[in-house]
Amino acid sequence: MNTNDYNRIEELIARFFEGGTTGEEEKELYGFFAGENIPLSLVPYKPLFGYFEHGMPAGLAEMEKATTMIPRRKSLLSVWIVAVAASLLVAAFSILFFTNKQEVENPFEGSYIIRNGMRITDPDIIRPELEAALRLVALQVEENERLWEEIRDPYEAVIRQFPDEYSQEAVRNILFK
Image 1 (cartoon, rainbow, N blue to C red):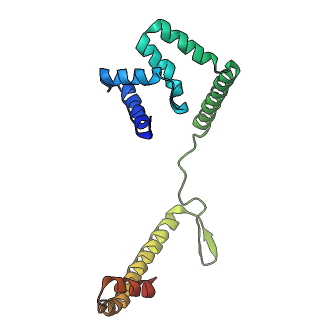
Image 2: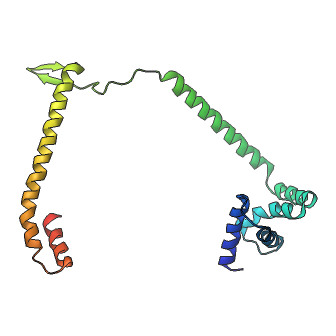
Image 3: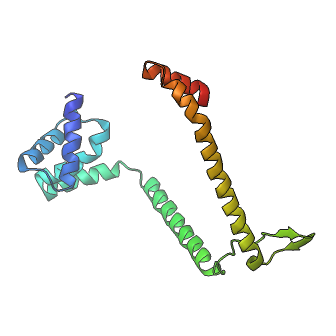
């Protein structure tokens, strides 16, 4: 089989588990997994499709054979690790949920202004001054953008004199970047 055939088999497997395969496609899967040339990535599906093709007795024996190949100690260790991780997660969320019942933080906490040498930390006094400072910064940004456009427009007139877009872009890169 070539790569395209294996890709088709993987596509059929996905559709099989979604319940979207036809009877003919399922027979194709059963035939493929009954063969010998199965890629290592698809070998775990072999007992499953053997079960579906032949029914309970043959499939069950093959599935038991396949599960005996997995060392029991490793699977118990994996279950134990998952159980410990889950219990730690539950404990962590419980601690966070039951101990983190604080009031909503004040966004001005730790903020202060100094007026006439005095440090003022009252949020009712600080808030209006902070909002005024933010408005001033926004006005300065708008003014800078306006000035930038005034400076840029004469350059754009010069750039448009170049005959092709490549040259225009090169000049823009030199001037503005």
